[in-house]
Image (cartoon, rainbow, N blue to C red; front, side, top):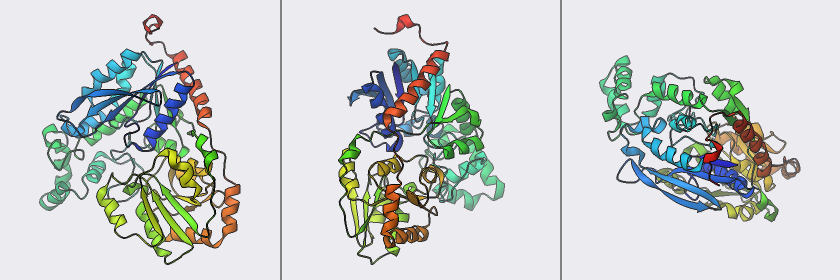
Length: 455
């Protein structure tokens, strides 16, 4: 079987959960005998032109083509994030050179939703794997810039207003344009490419109405759509995608490293955060909660993760860490056994509708209960008071209370460890996806002629 994966970024470039998931499943299929290739973006925002060619490499046996895209130099930067015709020749060249049996897209962010119809025009079945809310939210998180949780269903102006929140454009137009005049002006301005290229507007000003309509239209062209959680499926259904189009397939995990975990006892309750240090991950909520419990020599907090994405945020957090907090910085997946050997509880304090964070399954595989925000796919996979605890999303006070419960009840922690669910291995997901791929190939009547396949 020939499989082409398309995603936003791919390791070793910083990529988050979607990229690491794509790498895991791509490597699993490659190891199982499939021919696997990956198309992704790279050097996002770098280069002298909008499209700066590409580079090819091989990572863990998987061939990867990285398109060098400076999104800021697009003719209409915001609009090209969801509909980028400049990538058509590169996408067609990639697909036509491989003749894949199926294309599995795990993220359209960076490549734009247009890749779906581009691939479909070549007669290849397309599977789209929803990993966030990118098709219905320009910020892809359903978290407003003001910090308010959104559930979608908003009109175009509401999305534009959110994107411009607290910018210079926002401040100036609020001062100069009364009432509805402001919304009418900015909505018209968002349809003018020259305006969307101006400093202060890039990536935030655009045609919001067309974005939503186009992205969902492209998504509907997919032959199959997968969600790793019911929470994400439900939100897409609420925002116009028919529920019967989406099937739930839980992520599998490459957990061969888990048998290397050697739990090291400690008189302290050791809390751990693992993930990218960005606002939506809620690291500030965790640090605030931990500060409320100080001084307390029976508690430790360990922060692991890439802290280079938002340097202002990182500086703000690191400049005032509470006692007994250790900031470790970025880590490699190969370090998971040693890291999780010295963590008692993993905390996932995300303040957005996090879909299916891989770190929860990594914690379970290592024998660690999990504290999670009571929202989205996080709460869906953690049974409250059975294998972890829920706390009110964004509430440092409630998180502190839950940490206090665990610190005061060692027997509860032991009970949770005994009730950790089994982690779905990546091989099981590979089997499930193989069946889905096979069905797509069987039902596809527009594939490349078999005689065109390379030997």
